[in-house]
Length: 167
Image (cartoon, rainbow, N blue to C red):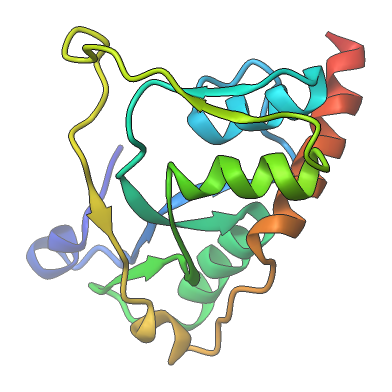
């Protein structure tokens, strides 16, 4: 059964909501279809990253461990009937900027980022989004994110390499 913060008010059900931004790190499947996993596969397979758009969507990202800590913080310290945003506000980057970091830092410049902009109207891509979540409410409970974008990529790539061997 699914409960919402509205059930808290209407039925007295103790409920809290954690709204997570894009979460990644160790545990992401090698075959994951999300864009950050594709960038990691390109590093592992040593192939160029090809963007099909200008990469203008910009959002926060969150490391797996930080997401788990945010959930526990809300469960243990959060107020019933409240919703909390969990994101690393310092990691607010575009789909254009992310692969450039991955290509230069994680692949040591061995791969390039190419833009092959085509008519993506039939590809099912989401419209351009600019989402920078405010996490002050969660931070007031004592939670802080810890891992930067570069380090989370290194850890995710290492984990994906290990898990690829078992598939």
